[in-house]
Length: 243
Image (cartoon, rainbow, N blue to C red; front, side, top):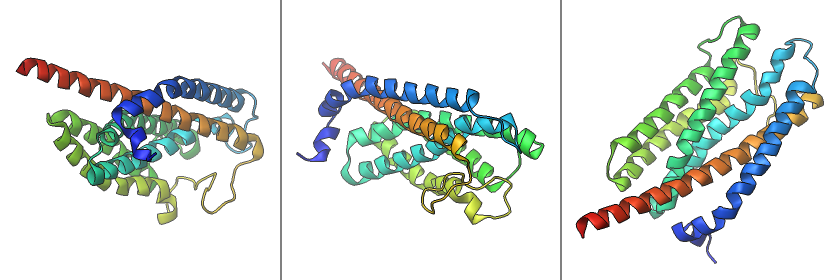
């Protein structure tokens, strides 16, 4: 059986129906458990005190803000190449989730920045690229709402998503591109290996990261199911109006 059969709207609705509640349940356990462990069971850091604990919100949210856009990019490319409607709806469904993650990352970063840098905001390369990414999220969602024809909207938002991916890449690797930024490097490098965070903080952080990742999947699946239902409803309404 081809993997594309699972993306057929009917098959998609069938296999995601039991997955969504389990994904929400697992993400709830991981997120709540990781945050409780991180905020209440880890000691204050020698240099940053209790402010270091904001990483349990900031890092997972920032990671998902970037990866959400990459997921939208893949779905948009699939739409452009195969004209697969579920992929376009999945990209649309992921945008608000990614936007909220970006807001969480920006707000927690500002809260962390005050005791660390003495200011809530600096025009650091990573912070600036994250702000631009947030604006791209808003523009992407606005473009979907501004165009009545869904296929045309999917085409134009796919182009916008591809262009916006440049800023998603900058957000991920800004510290490597520009050494003069105030923002610290990645605490948990995936490609290069090694990390700059102690085990006592690392384990709950990884739990939170997995929790946020599964929560993102659950939200995107749920919102995609909603988008499919909404498209079916519009099609039925239009058919009834022509009858």
